[in-house]
Amino acid sequence: MAFAARADQVLGHGHPAPGRVRARKWRREDGGQYPAEIDAMCGPGWQHAPGELAELSRYAREVGWPGYEWRYDPMRKRVTGTTATP
Image: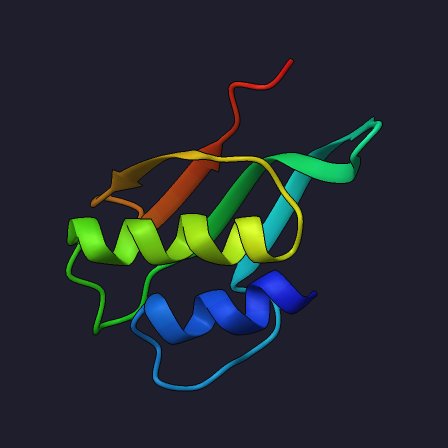
């Protein structure tokens, strides 16, 4: 998945690896297919800065997906993006 490869750059892992980014609840519209939810494991370099969240959103737009609202769960060390598009 192109998004996962780009997102790994921001998630603080330092190198790409499979399984860190999961796209769920796929939807299809006129503009194409996209996940309603993105769940990603954060690495040791993740700082939960607004710039990191903006980069994740930009990468999603680059692959043709809609905008996402991102939430960080420090207990699970995961960031989850959900789209408001029905």
